[in-house]
Length: 160
Length: 389
Image 1 (tube, helix red, strand yellow):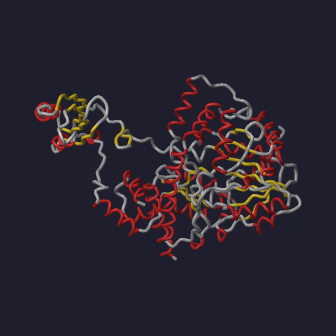
Image 2 (cartoon, rainbow over the protein chains, first blue to last red):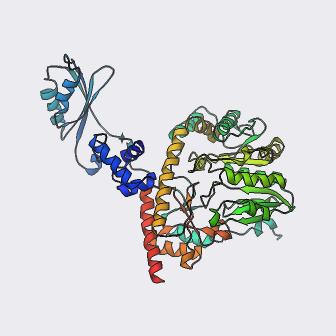
Image 3 (cartoon, helix red, strand yellow):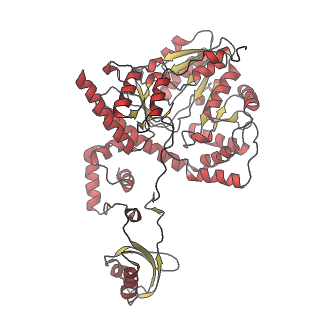
């Protein structure tokens, strides 16, 4: 049941528990218990909202920064990652295989704000060898959701 | 001037609920739960394959019975899904939707006066296609108390010495009824006893929510007397591609192919290439669609139960068929009033045969959000009717 619930709420976390139980064909109390348990265990880490900021007319600058670092003795990459993710303006930090080590996504109000973070905070860390900042120009799809307006239902009103 | 028209065609009655359709089409702002086709887009990989086939210039006829590569893939699919064994060379043809297959099968098998048993409520083409093929339709009224399954007794009572074909439309449009193994076993026994044939329309076979779908063609002694019809419209959300197929014993199929060859030539080539991809690589997409339909199905069953509306639980297709008999109105009256007052379109049950009177077909090929709004309005409407009584 855990997987069934997670698969569903990953796409739609706003559904109320009664309805969730109905559509999954499960007992309501059991669904509630499972949800609470998963929240406590931090399997469910939050309920966020996917926003098309561009459409809301609110300026946001998002950058994906490739970071090469020297892992620290005894701590590997984790210590460096922690140092980076503790900054509130950092959205996500992933350890990556390939040509660099971390993919850091960052959201700022302006280009300058992001640039300053990279030059003042990130690049100056001892363990950071180099950074490469990629600004996002347009979001087409995010979290499995296509950002463009979805086409209207063009089916005929009645089809037997 | 002489009458240019054929008597049989002109005598076919137009749908009794045409007036209702006219009202629906006038109302632009109505929410519709009246559509019998998936709300999902065809899986992208299938569309992509069609585009690729066009880029490759594959724009010529295929053989009359369809691309061999596709027929081989259909054979593999039918074996792994439903334990059916058909020779792609001699027992299978690709058609323009399941509907062409129905028409061609009836025309290939019927002589004047042969009776065709048509369980109703069911899809609207069986009856006119039977008449056009020169046969005599004999309807069997299915009952809600049997969850709209065909029982052995009902079948036995309808058989005469003129009966040639039984049509088996399960999972069913419009009721959502299914036939399980035990139900089919009883039917198969009688079919064999009376030496009649079965035309089984299993277009909704992928949308079965009570365990694996079973085909009557897989029963001992049945393959040789069954025309099996399926297609891509419902399972793969490919209605507009117009692609289906028929499988039958060689002697029947070869005659069907003759009609198809002269009337149609071959099914659309682009669609056939796309369908190969659908059969090979879309199990996950099909399963995801089925799961979503099932979620909506559970939701609707629950809502009707809460409203205390008489409604059996359907386990197939994407329809639910609640009874509105308690309100003392015809299906047509109910649907028209509901549409006018609440701006939601549902289909009167009698569109699918007289015995559908007193019921509504509600399609759940709509997003859950849409269904919620529509069902809230339905509940309001029902409450108002009950209060007025």
